[in-house]
Image (cartoon, rainbow, N blue to C red; front, top):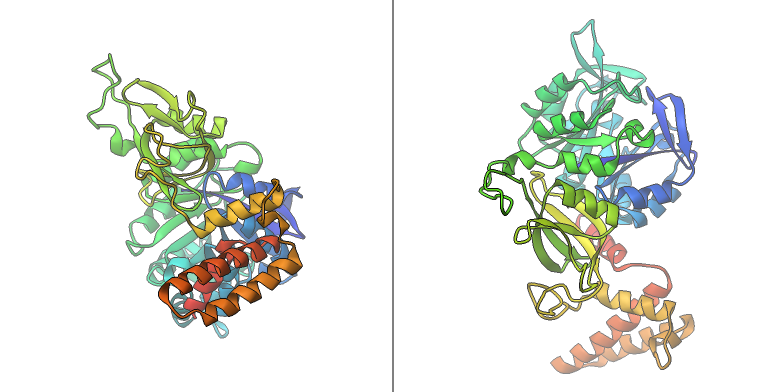
Length: 442
């Protein structure tokens, strides 16, 4: 998986060399988040909070509406982690706090255990930032914005930490922001030592596409900063190269008319934004690259022996929202907005004849009615005052309902008007579900 980084300082996206020297800054973090989300999760790091110089929480809240984000920087308590998850963060990244017990530097197992139990191991990442110590002959964990050496070894600490988290973020501080390439030695050591269910993401110095492929060979994700912002690496190229094509190099598929050829194809699952599976297909490297270029989902047609953009003849294209590689990087999940029926039979999905009715779909219909009112649309007439009156009215009627059918009918009314109310307020179903999830984990 390729992860783009947005480091926030003073409300701007910045890139620092060695964590202190400002190399570049941009004032469009929201636009960056929307763009980066097409290729993978976005790492949002609050540098001000990490350095104890303030907070970028308000802009982080905005970014969480724009992209699938993992958030770090100055997180010291379970309560802070819970708040970020409730706001929509996919994961939280904990740093210095994981290596302190009172005035001593040790892996804080008690803190990690409590964090893991309260927010869920699957939501927890620990940043193991390390510099090479010639005196100690190992990579040493550094904290407090990389200013304080701890005496703790990278490898020993990571092995302990991996029991409590779903992922470790290793930053090679010596190479961070220098564009000098990654040191693969500690990466290889980590990949062969941490818990088998703990993912490893590598950052610091990654400069070339070949390095991304090498990291993939170790089973590691890559987090890009300076190389991305300077244009040395494009996210589209990085995404293509990070996939596990080698798994399919010996598959028994040949290009039609050329029996000697072997064309690695990776499976692609297309789904709508509300999670309905639409179709499956296969893609080669060119098809994945073309998906990003055309902003619509492309496949490799095994029957035609050529690139094929879904809907190029019918007009029912699948507009790209985002691509995601699975945990083994050998399959792609494509989230798309279908322009019409997806199946060649005319059905909405290749796995069902009708579009599944979801609260997300209903909210999208309501939002469209508000945005583009049509003559006779009742929804378009629901201003703030009227919709609140209807919610109270329907809630009372639901409470008074007696029979099964009455409860279904009145609940449907209440769901509809409640969705209209939250849509007018700019609140999404996902935000409601995230809040319920946060309460569930208390």
